[in-house]
Image (cartoon, rainbow, N blue to C red; front, side, top):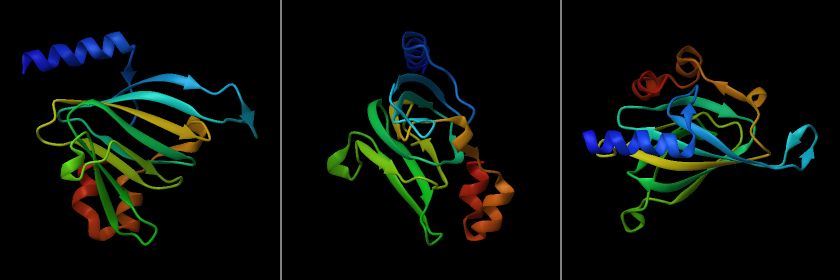
Length: 159
């Protein structure tokens, strides 16, 4: 366990990551110099979740592509347009149904957490049009429970 903690600390330091408001750690690595309608065309970040952490339910007004780089697997959970809870595991166990990349469509309420066996997961997120905090919302538990009451357990866990 100490070894994985030192790896996590070293990765955070080497990649220049900082705490993210939704949970985990991040470092912006790219912001397109091309701007259309007051938005950069694309942005990219490194993103890390560690054992016991979560990316709380949130939404952005752009598509977000998640990429798996190293470590253990992560479950992405999101609400489909019809209100059903959907999930996908992002990781490198492709033959076991995991995917190395996944797109969360714009305006989707979603969250993520490492699988129980995951000590850390180093991921990337690419957003197009580019990420802007004006387009990001951390969704409250109350708002989600009102909209999706049958999913109380996961909402309480990830808000």
